[in-house]
Amino acid sequence: MKTKLLLLFISIFGTVSVLDASTNLPLPVIPSIQFLITSYGATPTRLENATAINAAITAANAAGG
Image (tube, rainbow, N blue to C red; front, side, top):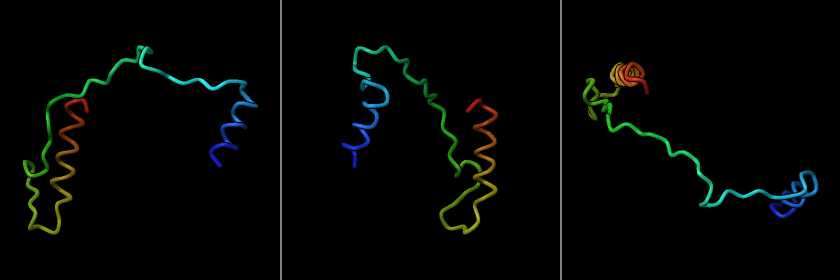
């Protein structure tokens, strides 16, 4: 199946373009800050941690993430 798709792609576009190590793509910037749900009240023994999870997501969003 993969061979048929590759042949179809080549027949439509005429070539296969592959990115290699020489391509200068910018690397993503990943901040070091963490939003642990346990810091927002979640515990392994509670069945309902949705409030803590939502609070952590809200904090991450407010921090630009």
